[in-house]
Length: 99
Image 1 (cartoon, one colour):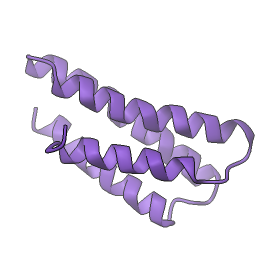
Image 2 (cartoon, one colour):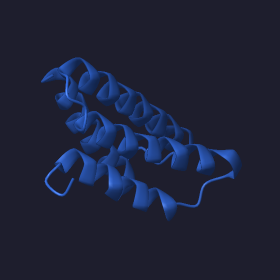
Image 3 (cartoon, one colour):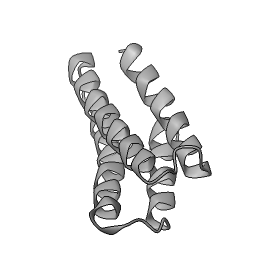
């Protein structure tokens, strides 16, 4: 996974999310969704067929969108963590498109 840039971005994003001060259930939702991004990217990368890879990358992208919604609700979409998430979204979308 060391050479899988999108996965590395997902790990970095998850670590940044852990340091955010968010209200109530949104913090837990963001942490679960950010973990889902990394885990689904990793699982997709290990699948032998393009169809399976695309399915897991698409699930990861759905979790990226969930993270974007949380950051928007908290007014953090333009913050450094929001910019990191935008980069992760672009990388994940490119993975799906290239399958």
